[in-house]
Every structure is written in C-alpha cells, then in structure tokens.
Length: 202
Image (cartoon, rainbow, N blue to C red):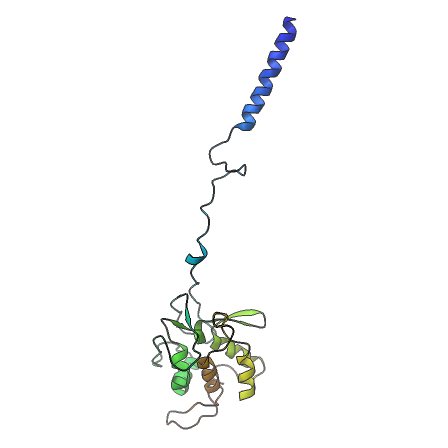
C-alpha cells in the first residue's frame, strides 16, 4: 500500500513538473514565436518617396519630395535650371544647355517641386526608368529615327505614373529639341542635328 502511494506521488510530481515547464514563458517570447515583438512599420502616410537617383542623361538628384510638377503645360512650378553647365557636364547635357535650354531642357530640370520630366516614375518595356526624359531617350535609342512620329510613339510610353501615365509637355518639347525638330545653334538658326550624336542616339 505504501509502495502504491509512493509511485502515485512520484507520478504526480513528474506531471506537475512537465506542466510547469510547458507553461513557462521566457523573457522575449511573444505569442509563442519567441523573440521580441517588432515595432511595426510606419503608417502609409509617413512613408517617403525615395530620393531619386540620377537618370541616363546624368545630372543632379532630385529633392526627394513626395509631389511632382506634372508639367502639363510650359509653365514651371519649381525653380528652373539656368543651363549654365552646372547640372550635367556630359557632352549630352552641355549640348542640351546650348541648343534646348528654352525648348524644354531648363524646365525639365526644375526642382521644388521636382519636375516629372526628370524625376517622374516611368516604365519602359517592363523596366522602371526614373524621369520622363530619360525614358524618352531610351525609347528613341531602341531604333532611332528621330522624326515626329517616333517622338510621339515614345511619348505614349513614357508618362510618369504619378501623373496618370500622361507625358508632360516639357518632356515632349525637350525630346523634340533633342532629335533636331526644334533645336537651334548659337546664332539662333535651326540646327537639324539637335543633340542626337552627343546623347548617344547616332
């Protein structure tokens, strides 16, 4: 009889020990997954647009603002670029400074707010491209012709998503000057060559 009582007591003690072990929560355990609980991400309203990287034509980064000037007209909301060589010192940039400053290039590089021409989010052939102008440049380079028809065809593909996928007028104007449709030389005379060679299209 005493032996049975001893065995029962031992069994009860073992079960109690197992239950106590199973129910013990060590510091840091959360909902059974262990480790400290995360602090959670920022609310959607606090997530900032990443600071843009420089696009294919070179130049300076944008200000990282969450809004863009969609440039549906020729008027610029931000601070226009002075076309003084300080934005892009490449052969392409310097050519655009000289031949296309007042034909879209100055407005294309405006900041505060950033211009969609330079900093809008576009997609070309399944790849993300920053800036409507850089998208146009890549599109034109695919099979370069340099006429109005090609510019218009690329325009349909290069509108910024922030602006409803519609290409801004400034980007259109800049592309037309780039290919020589509206560019002028230092004397103000028509320059049919544009900046196609300097920008790697030829």
